[in-house]
Image (cartoon, rainbow over all chains, first blue to last red):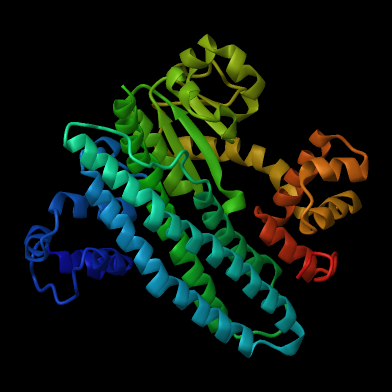
Length: 228
Length: 191
């Protein structure tokens, strides 16, 4: 099936294929052809697309057959996408929404902005930890195992729990808007904020699922080998 | 939304049956989070077996592990092929037509939901507001128990009820709600 047809049917996949460096203008090429063109592992691409399309589809065994560096590379690109596009997108819509709301509801919406800032701090902190500590450690461990040594380098002692916190904060923000919003406000901008929050929540949920159920078990197994 | 998501453990050895149940739940009872287990032992290996709202398993498995399922009987769906043998229970006769299966599942899931909806429909009690204030001021559960002279367990119950009523799970979200409704001031929470 041509990638263009799939993306036309499910436009939410556009940012996902973008993380693999694939740009629109894919013509009638199949996923395999596009993957070849961009030097991407077609199996890995298909697997990731499927996990986003169907939340109940999660082939753990197949996903665990991929290399740590592939998964880390994908998650790194996802993190970059959050920082460059999704966070600014929510912020832009939220600021416009707050600015156009009636003065009576302005103060509570300003506080909602504070909640968003809490989410932003949580997410950027988690991404910094990925970039500076965890991912380099995972890659070093993987390299060490590939070299036959399997010596444990400076590695994180435990896996972060802040991931779930980011999902919960996104859900709380949507819930607060849907259930407790009052006063005069711009409905279109409100929808844009909720839509942006919801898109990010869905994305982060898949992202964290790949981390928790694929990356961490692989790293955990490598650590056990290293300890032997 | 997140607060109304049902977490369902499907403990069924037959892969096709397990996938079929997952599809039924996802298609007709969203939002749901389904986890599939091939056996009771695999369920036990799961970090928190009590985190599920419902359990679905074959009648034989439920009978074999009645010590686990009996206290959770109102939240357990039994799969059976024997028509009528579990007429008054949460039995799902697997060879019934799809429409009947959906109707039965609806009946089981909504009987549990009535409790949730009663909880979420009410306003916060004065005690819950006191707990909410202290949460917003950054107090941890142990401190809240001491300040209000109640047990730690009671604090947990109040917090659970607050989350059920408001649908807000994070401390940041609860703080926002408390500020928005005037239960605390920005000075009190150090903003």
